[in-house]
Image 1 (cartoon, rainbow, N blue to C red):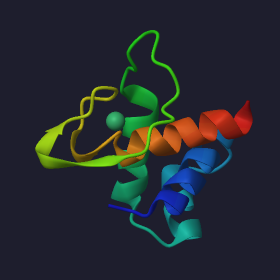
Image 2 (image 1 turned 90 degrees about the horizontal axis):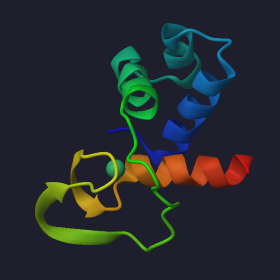
Image 3 (image 1 turned 30 degrees about the horizontal axis):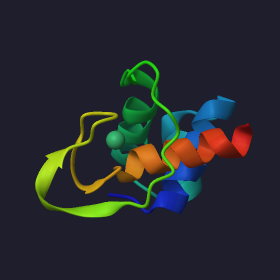
Length: 93
Ligand SMILES: [Zn+2]
């Protein structure tokens, strides 16, 4: 798992569309598979309709559960990926 600031940078670079996933990995010093995972989670996973931005404070689940937004297996709700996506959406708005 990569840190949230790096994930946000990956999402920004992917959104700009100028660099390939491999170039982004080299630029940020992370693995190409990490960039691919962020690209898959950010772009290909459908988001439920009518989902509002997450403003609630993340809470640790006693047992791993499924994120209600992206259906990932997580220990925190909302999950880190959804928190990063919402942060970027608010930043761009
Ligand atoms: Zn999620």
